Length: 218
Image (cartoon, rainbow, N blue to C red):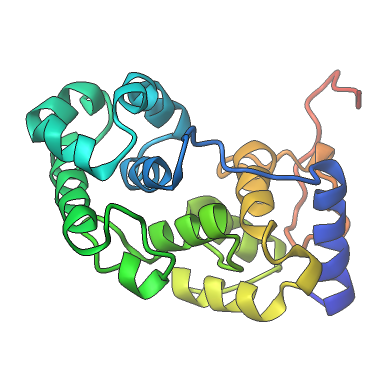
Protein backbone atom coordinates (compact mmCIF):
# COMPACT_ATOMS: atom_id res chain seq x y z
CA UNK A 1 0.00 0.00 0.00
CA UNK A 2 1.34 3.45 -0.92
CA UNK A 3 2.20 5.98 1.77
CA UNK A 4 -0.65 8.27 0.76
CA UNK A 5 -3.10 5.37 0.93
CA UNK A 6 -1.82 4.32 4.36
CA UNK A 7 -2.33 7.85 5.65
CA UNK A 8 -5.84 7.94 4.22
CA UNK A 9 -6.58 4.47 5.64
CA UNK A 10 -5.82 5.63 9.17
CA UNK A 11 -7.41 9.05 8.67
CA UNK A 12 -10.77 7.51 7.88
CA UNK A 13 -10.65 5.12 10.84
CA UNK A 14 -9.62 8.02 13.09
CA UNK A 15 -12.47 10.20 11.85
CA UNK A 16 -14.96 7.48 12.79
CA UNK A 17 -13.37 6.87 16.21
CA UNK A 18 -11.18 9.81 17.30
CA UNK A 19 -10.35 8.43 20.76
CA UNK A 20 -10.05 4.62 20.47
CA UNK A 21 -9.61 2.54 23.61
CA UNK A 22 -9.21 -1.09 24.54
CA UNK A 23 -12.45 -2.96 25.20
CA UNK A 24 -10.93 -4.59 28.27
CA UNK A 25 -12.30 -3.14 31.52
CA UNK A 26 -9.77 -2.02 34.13
CA UNK A 27 -9.29 0.63 36.79
CA UNK A 28 -5.52 1.01 36.91
CA UNK A 29 -2.36 -0.13 35.17
CA UNK A 30 -2.00 -3.25 37.27
CA UNK A 31 -5.55 -4.36 36.49
CA UNK A 32 -4.87 -3.69 32.80
CA UNK A 33 -1.83 -5.97 32.93
CA UNK A 34 -3.85 -8.73 34.58
CA UNK A 35 -6.71 -8.34 32.11
CA UNK A 36 -4.40 -8.56 29.10
CA UNK A 37 -2.70 -11.68 30.50
CA UNK A 38 -6.12 -13.26 31.01
CA UNK A 39 -7.26 -12.29 27.50
CA UNK A 40 -4.88 -14.67 25.71
CA UNK A 41 -7.05 -17.07 23.68
CA UNK A 42 -10.14 -15.53 25.27
CA UNK A 43 -12.55 -12.76 24.33
CA UNK A 44 -12.54 -9.33 25.94
CA UNK A 45 -16.20 -9.84 26.81
CA UNK A 46 -15.40 -13.06 28.65
CA UNK A 47 -12.49 -11.49 30.50
CA UNK A 48 -14.55 -8.47 31.55
CA UNK A 49 -17.26 -10.74 32.91
CA UNK A 50 -14.74 -12.72 34.94
CA UNK A 51 -12.87 -9.70 36.30
CA UNK A 52 -15.89 -7.58 37.21
CA UNK A 53 -16.03 -8.84 40.81
CA UNK A 54 -12.31 -9.60 40.98
CA UNK A 55 -11.32 -6.00 40.27
CA UNK A 56 -13.74 -4.72 42.89
CA UNK A 57 -11.70 -6.51 45.52
CA UNK A 58 -8.22 -6.60 43.97
CA UNK A 59 -6.57 -3.36 42.83
CA UNK A 60 -2.91 -4.03 43.74
CA UNK A 61 -0.40 -6.84 43.27
CA UNK A 62 -0.27 -7.39 47.04
CA UNK A 63 -4.02 -7.88 47.21
CA UNK A 64 -3.72 -10.44 44.41
CA UNK A 65 -1.00 -12.29 46.29
CA UNK A 66 -3.19 -12.24 49.39
CA UNK A 67 -6.11 -13.64 47.39
CA UNK A 68 -3.95 -16.56 46.33
CA UNK A 69 -4.02 -18.87 43.37
CA UNK A 70 -7.06 -20.86 44.52
CA UNK A 71 -9.03 -17.69 45.19
CA UNK A 72 -8.12 -16.24 41.81
CA UNK A 73 -9.22 -19.42 40.04
CA UNK A 74 -12.69 -19.06 41.50
CA UNK A 75 -13.00 -15.70 39.77
CA UNK A 76 -11.56 -16.67 36.39
CA UNK A 77 -12.64 -20.29 35.98
CA UNK A 78 -14.90 -19.32 33.06
CA UNK A 79 -11.85 -18.23 31.04
CA UNK A 80 -9.91 -20.69 28.90
CA UNK A 81 -6.58 -21.93 30.31
CA UNK A 82 -7.50 -20.42 33.68
CA UNK A 83 -5.25 -22.73 35.69
CA UNK A 84 -2.07 -21.62 33.97
CA UNK A 85 -3.19 -18.00 33.89
CA UNK A 86 -3.91 -17.99 37.62
CA UNK A 87 -0.44 -19.33 38.32
CA UNK A 88 1.16 -16.67 36.12
CA UNK A 89 -0.87 -13.79 37.57
CA UNK A 90 0.07 -14.73 41.12
CA UNK A 91 3.73 -15.15 40.12
CA UNK A 92 3.93 -11.82 38.30
CA UNK A 93 2.18 -10.11 41.19
CA UNK A 94 4.77 -11.47 43.61
CA UNK A 95 7.55 -10.13 41.37
CA UNK A 96 5.92 -6.70 41.13
CA UNK A 97 5.70 -6.51 44.92
CA UNK A 98 9.22 -7.82 45.47
CA UNK A 99 11.14 -6.05 42.71
CA UNK A 100 9.09 -3.06 41.56
CA UNK A 101 7.45 -1.59 44.64
CA UNK A 102 4.06 -2.91 43.57
CA UNK A 103 4.14 -0.83 40.37
CA UNK A 104 3.93 -1.98 36.75
CA UNK A 105 7.20 -1.00 35.04
CA UNK A 106 6.90 1.27 32.02
CA UNK A 107 9.46 -0.74 30.07
CA UNK A 108 8.67 -3.41 27.51
CA UNK A 109 11.84 -5.42 28.07
CA UNK A 110 11.11 -5.59 31.79
CA UNK A 111 7.47 -6.49 31.24
CA UNK A 112 8.24 -9.48 29.00
CA UNK A 113 10.31 -10.97 31.81
CA UNK A 114 7.13 -11.34 33.91
CA UNK A 115 5.39 -14.75 33.91
CA UNK A 116 2.66 -14.94 31.28
CA UNK A 117 3.68 -11.68 29.62
CA UNK A 118 4.76 -11.97 26.01
CA UNK A 119 5.63 -9.25 23.54
CA UNK A 120 1.99 -8.71 22.52
CA UNK A 121 0.84 -8.30 26.12
CA UNK A 122 3.72 -5.94 26.87
CA UNK A 123 2.90 -3.88 23.79
CA UNK A 124 -0.74 -3.53 24.86
CA UNK A 125 0.25 -2.36 28.35
CA UNK A 126 2.85 0.06 27.00
CA UNK A 127 0.32 1.51 24.58
CA UNK A 128 -2.78 1.68 26.76
CA UNK A 129 -1.17 2.60 30.07
CA UNK A 130 1.83 4.65 29.02
CA UNK A 131 0.89 5.99 25.59
CA UNK A 132 3.80 4.29 23.86
CA UNK A 133 3.84 3.91 20.08
CA UNK A 134 3.66 0.11 20.18
CA UNK A 135 1.77 -2.24 17.91
CA UNK A 136 0.36 -5.34 19.61
CA UNK A 137 -0.33 -7.76 16.77
CA UNK A 138 -3.12 -10.18 17.60
CA UNK A 139 -5.04 -12.37 15.15
CA UNK A 140 -7.20 -9.41 14.08
CA UNK A 141 -4.29 -7.10 13.30
CA UNK A 142 -2.35 -9.89 11.60
CA UNK A 143 -5.34 -10.54 9.36
CA UNK A 144 -6.06 -6.89 8.60
CA UNK A 145 -2.40 -6.10 7.93
CA UNK A 146 -2.10 -8.90 5.40
CA UNK A 147 -5.56 -8.84 3.86
CA UNK A 148 -5.63 -5.10 3.19
CA UNK A 149 -1.98 -4.77 2.23
CA UNK A 150 -1.45 -2.23 5.02
CA UNK A 151 1.31 -4.24 6.73
CA UNK A 152 1.93 -7.61 5.05
CA UNK A 153 4.08 -10.17 6.81
CA UNK A 154 4.36 -13.93 7.24
CA UNK A 155 4.86 -13.71 11.00
CA UNK A 156 3.41 -11.64 13.83
CA UNK A 157 6.75 -9.91 14.33
CA UNK A 158 7.00 -9.11 10.61
CA UNK A 159 3.58 -7.44 10.68
CA UNK A 160 4.55 -5.53 13.82
CA UNK A 161 7.74 -4.28 12.18
CA UNK A 162 5.81 -3.27 9.05
CA UNK A 163 3.37 -1.28 11.18
CA UNK A 164 6.21 0.37 13.08
CA UNK A 165 7.85 1.39 9.81
CA UNK A 166 4.77 2.43 7.86
CA UNK A 167 2.33 4.02 10.33
CA UNK A 168 2.37 7.83 10.04
CA UNK A 169 3.09 9.94 13.12
CA UNK A 170 -0.43 11.26 13.81
CA UNK A 171 -1.81 7.74 14.09
CA UNK A 172 0.91 5.76 15.84
CA UNK A 173 -0.61 5.66 19.33
CA UNK A 174 -4.15 4.85 18.19
CA UNK A 175 -3.26 2.46 15.35
CA UNK A 176 -3.32 -0.63 17.56
CA UNK A 177 -6.91 0.04 18.61
CA UNK A 178 -8.26 1.07 15.21
CA UNK A 179 -6.91 -2.06 13.55
CA UNK A 180 -8.18 -4.43 16.25
CA UNK A 181 -11.66 -2.91 16.16
CA UNK A 182 -11.67 -2.94 12.36
CA UNK A 183 -10.75 -6.62 12.35
CA UNK A 184 -13.18 -7.48 15.11
CA UNK A 185 -16.26 -5.80 13.67
CA UNK A 186 -15.78 -5.27 9.92
CA UNK A 187 -12.79 -7.10 8.44
CA UNK A 188 -13.89 -10.37 10.05
CA UNK A 189 -12.04 -13.64 9.59
CA UNK A 190 -14.63 -15.72 7.74
CA UNK A 191 -16.65 -13.06 5.95
CA UNK A 192 -15.27 -9.54 5.84
CA UNK A 193 -18.11 -7.03 5.63
CA UNK A 194 -16.64 -5.11 2.71
CA UNK A 195 -19.98 -3.50 1.86
CA UNK A 196 -19.78 -1.32 4.97
CA UNK A 197 -16.01 -0.86 5.17
CA UNK A 198 -14.81 2.76 5.26
CA UNK A 199 -11.51 1.88 3.57
CA UNK A 200 -12.77 -0.59 0.99
CA UNK A 201 -11.36 1.33 -1.97
CA UNK A 202 -7.87 1.32 -0.42
CA UNK A 203 -7.87 -2.39 0.40
CA UNK A 204 -6.10 -4.95 -1.77
CA UNK A 205 -8.40 -7.81 -0.79
CA UNK A 206 -10.15 -9.38 -3.76
CA UNK A 207 -12.84 -10.27 -4.38
CA UNK A 208 -14.75 -7.90 -2.15
CA UNK A 209 -17.65 -9.43 -0.21
CA UNK A 210 -21.03 -8.29 -1.46
CA UNK A 211 -23.71 -6.92 0.84
CA UNK A 212 -26.41 -9.35 1.97
CA UNK A 213 -29.71 -9.07 0.18
CA UNK A 214 -31.85 -6.26 1.51
CA UNK A 215 -28.99 -4.48 3.29
CA UNK A 216 -29.05 -0.69 3.15
CA UNK A 217 -26.49 1.75 4.45
CA UNK A 218 -27.79 3.56 7.52
